[in-house]
Image 1 (tube, one colour):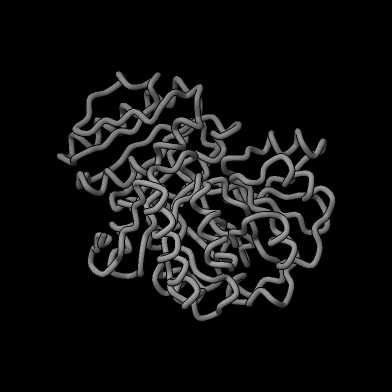
Image 2 (cartoon, rainbow, N blue to C red; image 1 turned 90 degrees about the horizontal axis):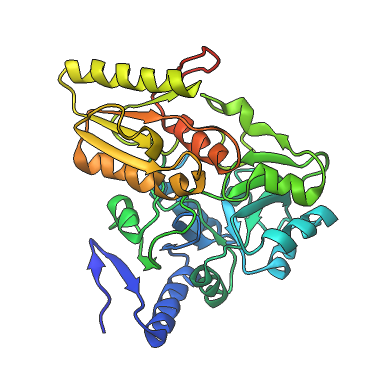
Length: 363
């Protein structure tokens, strides 16, 4: 059986156990030779390369057109492999690993010299996680090396949650994509600094701040607050802190604030763009779906179920590009639990943030 090939990128999709083994061996050989393979995780698809091979890591930066000061996350099969990459693992990190690995939690720890500086963007720490997706862990095992794997998209674009999304951006740029279906979480992993001092949240994701504090039995410093409506200033200790990300091609206007006032602002903004003759996409919660007609209307999910919204968010943003809308108006959500991760992505995708209470800021 010949694998499908799109612009030079081989698409590896397994329909049975024998096909999966062949696909994994094919992908592992590419990785061993310093090539790049996109693969599924529970969060988003990652663009994988040998984390210990500076040439492979350099290829990741070049293919993604990623700024060189934006560190990469290293994916491993478990704590044993993680321990070979870092100088020490504090007891609280072991506790978090027991509760959340495999899963969408990345921990930042002091790195050993074994890890090239290019993988960590020159930082003395490494960001490490164990993905929950079984196919991802099988690939890392087959390759025999930890995999540096940022999201498998061009830098700044919405992250990919299907193999098709990967191919939209990277077909012809990478050797292969391992198709494992749709991602179950839909936004990137939570990143937590476990360097000496207070544990610090660097990026919200599938493991919420509340879940972390519940396990640690103490407060976690939230460093994502600095990036509200803007970017982290200085050298970013984690991916997703310094640069604008996740942006569709059309300008995105995010409306935040008190919910009743927010709905009125959403209607007023949409009607204003419609009067200008622009093709408007309106992205709303299920609770707000009937507030205003628009050429394109998409319901992201219920305000009561932010994990549902997170799972759909990037796919909907990519759909807006395919529909060639002129402008996107998006409802803001409560920043609790998974809502914190949703709003982090929307703020970084926004061309402008409009607040009904004057407490927010814009790009």
